Length: 306
Image (cartoon, rainbow, N blue to C red; front, side, top):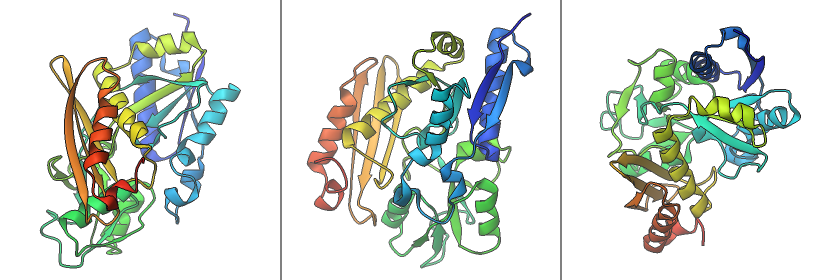
């Protein structure tokens, strides 16, 4: 059977390459193509090159996407794969989120201790996530947090070497790397995840209808719906990489339930809420954002939209 010759762009980290292979395999299976129909093209991003500074200080989530965007729009690649939680909320109009794979475990995992409660007083936690910093300090104000970047293996090695008492990683990434037993899952009632955590998205040029049609065959509709609702909340909040926000949308029958929390940077104040909307209701994430901001303490509200 003849098949196209396509180029799939991805970051070059071990996890990104695993996710790119997942996309390639799913697409080839869906269309009966041979594996060599799709060439995986690793592209080094600014976020990969700069490891000693918080992303929020040097450009935010665009540091994971801008090189891939450039390759996509120039035609150097035909489509690109991303961890959706690393994709900035406002995307170029010439690029479309064409599909998402089924979402994996949305939870965080604690690395280095059997529980948050078991960590010593004043424990040092390595993380680069403002959300995790705020959530951990809300649970344990005695914790000290330090910047922790790098791929999964790098972070695990730092914990093993005793550079910090503990760190946190996404359960989905550990599972995809074949490490389901690493770390302890933190239930979402304790730490609500980042918006879009656990979701893998695939983007194509907006005007490339053939590529978008091919990708539609592997789109997991429930994941796509829920992640777009979570991203809609971020847009309504005008949230960015500095913003400590957690959110999770889930399907319940013919409705979507959206839970969210906003935090002060040090976890000293927060606001939470939940709202149910019909599938296709494009406004309820905006309504939840407005409700949260109206009820938020000043220390929280000043970090988000006016």
